[in-house]
Amino acid sequence: MDRFFLVHKKPGLTSSQVVQKLKHKLNLSKLGHTGTLDKFAEGLLILPSGKACSFAGLFLEMDKTYQVTLNLGIATDSGDTEGEILNQVNEDEIHRVWKEDWKDGQLLQDSILSLNDQTEQTAPMVSALKFQGKRLSDYHRSGVVVAPKVRPIRVDRVAILEFQLDSVVFDIRVSSGTYIRKMAMDIGEKLGFPISLKKLVRLSVGDFELKKAKTWEDISPEDGISIPQAMNLPKITVGEEHKPWIRSGRSPELEGIQNLEGDFLLLDSLGNCLAWCRKKNHMDWQYIRVFL
Image (cartoon, rainbow, N blue to C red; front, side, top):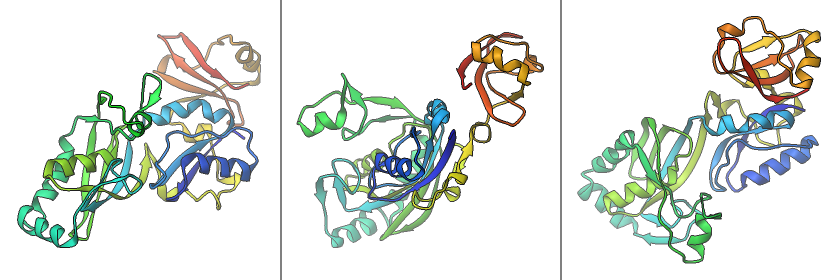
């Protein structure tokens, strides 16, 4: 089965656990992922099966949208609910800071909206990023200090949804590889106050939205999206006489190839994906993956 499944991961499960549960339920020989979510988080996972796994890297590069709920008064080493508490203040102090130091929350609101201007980010030490073959989180747990990794990011939109002392919620659309929990930690550091994530929901990956996803328990084989449906790439349909050429890696002449740029798919008359290809110049192209 060569399909993509849109899965709504619930909090408390790791992404790997969701993959294994769905793989077993649908009796799939191969099921991968296109970017994980932390255990405490929920939201959209796009899981490719069979030949669809070849396209996983393209999804990793797509922009993501999240709904963020801040936890005021608690700072953890990971920036979320699963980390070790580093600093915590009581409710009276939270109320005082909100009203006096933050001028009825205005400074916090300004700090959230200023994320729009962020162009780089230092990766959190509790993360899966690797340094010399080991995860940063492994160094952190063993007490070894390594140089922080600074990476370019892009923030396309920040929209505040709720803004009250007991409920600060906003949406944010960011480039791939952005750590939202690090943003919460950075806001806390900027304001000199413990802040972390209370809740994180991934709403979209590229053009794929959480509202079209199902939990792993509710997904059936019919919910899978075919490669041609899922991939926003140009498509060329070829006849049966082309299949021996494609199978052997030879490049037949393709009608309309001169009008294409970049990557495209070859389909048969039934709409099945035969190959993933890339345009090189005016009439020349090459195979990225052949699925025959």
